[in-house]
Amino acid sequence: MSHHIRVVYCTQCAWMLRAAWVAQELLTTFQDELMGGGATLEPGTGGIFEVYADDGLVWSRKADGGFPDIVVLKRRVRDRIAPDRALGHADRAAARPTDPDR
View 1: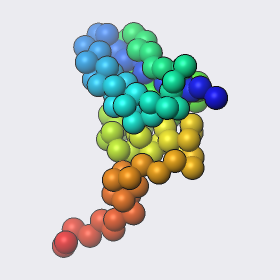
View 2 (view 1 turned 90 degrees about the vertical axis):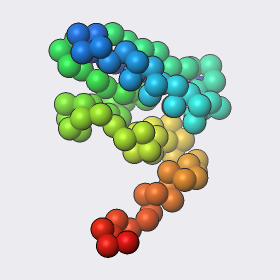
View 3 (view 1 turned 180 degrees about the horizontal axis):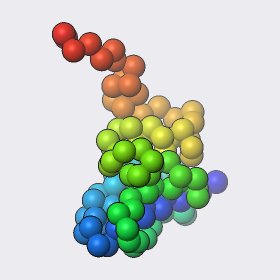
């Protein structure tokens, strides 16, 4: 099954380059899963920055409080389109305890 990523970005805020970078990162990481579906950039307004995987919202700047950390975003996309897939360093980073004294 092919999957699709859609990144909606605000043209008034000039976030197209950020949206293109996010799409590039997701296309690189999920190249097999996105074969035949791909990724699209969708211009919007009003400060919007949202990422959808198969029409399901996985990140919203407004709801999630800012722009996504790419590792967090990749895990969210993975959980939606390829839940059994390992992400290597991204999974190891999530499992690492966040001890400020380390």
